[in-house]
Image 1: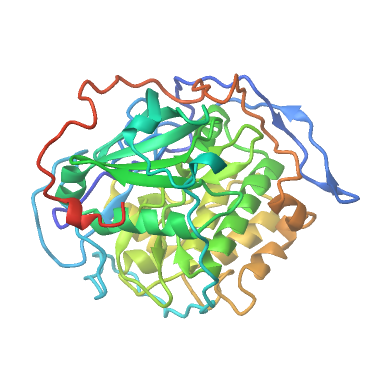
Image 2: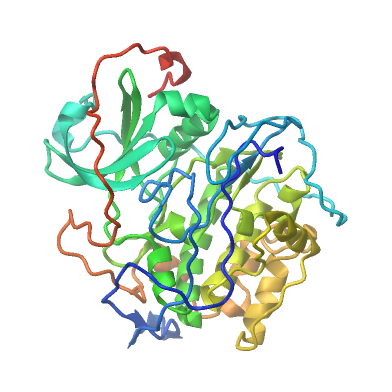
Length: 454
């Protein structure tokens, strides 16, 4: 295992109950069904299942490297067979994206051939950097914001709730230490995240409002999504009812459909990266592993439980990996645990490649049929990767009754509405010790040329 440049894997939970530090006072409604093009909701809240104690090294805006609650953690596997020393639960150096195939992981299963449909790239969406119409030409800086509190911490820095001095609105400011980004070889991923968020705008994705840098840090100003993580809701419930899982999966599907239309793959789907706005709709966050891929890529990165077989086997891959991860998400939301889990991550990878899924007895046949078509290692059979594209998934019987146009316009009531006391409410996020070191102090700026667009 020493050939991993970064190893901070999530030890997958077994389907047992466990303790939680968070609370959730709101209810989950029980009907996500269509009746004359209207979706009604009733209230119900189940009890919690699901935890583990492994730290995360992934810089998610809302909770990077969460320490008090269980998370899916991310890994990056190097694209050359180097063997640096690694330490458990610590981050060592990581390699950048590579255009050449890396060696495969040591698993014995045979791989399947790769064939990904090419989708023409849409026109670029300009970045909207102004806080109000009166500050269109404003160059953002620390002086434009009041720092309120920390929302998350991680290997590269932390995320703060901030309030604009110009319009008094709240934002999430992701602060990354340049020295750590460079040391961990995440320069390209960081620049990719900025570039992709600048290009994209979708109802179910966080919005990047602007970036800047000083001598020591990079700053990304994004939407503050006040409802917290979907993961926090999932870990409080034993599992989601069918209609609840369907609602969140439908919104993820629409976001992926949009990203893929621009030849962008996400590569880091998990409940921790799905935030809930004040109305209960999702916002996908943390685009550090997202990449523009018009053909194929080989970088082995992501969350172990959610890795597609072709990623583990070092096959060239593209958009199909996101549809596989959607299958994992649906399974986990319905079961309370992922389809493959093992405390030894090498055995986990072998199980993923083998592809023998054990479905709980309470799974309905229609969802099992969908999952078999998403979790297959055969790319010539995986839904989303066929001639029909994402329409094959949307037209599956499990999604029957979903009004996709109304859902995209956020006209359908969410099954869970977060408890929110104002725009700057942070009660849906964990508390963290505040940073003693202040930002903006002059120092040698030796890495500025590595982040020319910030």
